[in-house]
Length: 211
Image (cartoon, rainbow, N blue to C red; front, side, top):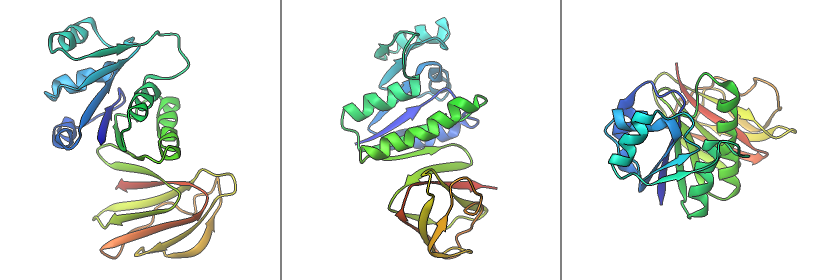
């Protein structure tokens, strides 16, 4: 089962929501992101969070549209983003896409990106998307289609770095090490029809970013 999580970060183009919304079995909206849904004429299957960033007007619209609401206290140990992920994992979703994960609050942005690790550790497919980027967490293999004007970057998240093989790229690697805290894996390009990323050891984020 596939689920889409809509967070209250930046969504600069609502067309993305309209285009991808139909691809998912379940749409879960976190707190103030309901405004994006309403503007895009998307009715999520549930609204979740402490509701501290939703206006009374939008909350009333959500209730008028009979959207189920799962409300949490403002004082809690998890962000609304993590509550949304937990909800889906507990219900057996096998593929989770997150949109609206990035924005002005860099702490929230980074924490949201690292939620991909939590998803991955449960054996669930996950990715973060926005208008110009798609982010994966990879510990084994990832196959990517070539797109014009897109760059591929590998950012290790394990302390000892990652051992990777890259095929179909401008800069290919063969069981090479990318150290944690370096930029060695940034700004590569796919030159064949497909690019193959194989992680032999460690974990890394793979960013697919439009220039």
